[in-house]
Amino acid sequence: MDGIAGRLTEETLGVVRGTAMWARRITKNSMGGIRQFNVNGLQDIDDGLSSAKEQASRAMEAQAAKLGADAILGLRLDVVEMSSGAFCVNVTGTAVKTAKLPQSIPAFASAVEEAGSAMPFLAARASFEGSSLRH
Image (tube, rainbow, N blue to C red):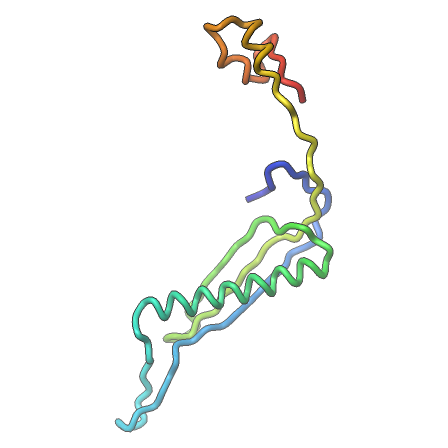
């Protein structure tokens, strides 16, 4: 996403990154030194990659905190299989400083009374002439 609802981006601090590696457990057996992967199912892979995503995200957040950011925008997460069973998780985003926007308060009751009961939906449109929305 390019922004945060209710907040204004004041300053862009730079690109922040996090990387983590995850591999399935590799063991050797007595059958001529053939390696095999010990995976109990898709749940093991899912758990391992979720853990790697969390590690990468924490590294990125720590880098953003060092820059003084209070938010990260434009988040991108890539999972790349480096070799059979070894995965690299890369997380990238833009560290920014934000400020809270003042809240606008719609005055729907008076606009509905002015427009009549047949057109209450027009009161919510800022482009409607006679709308009493305040910004």
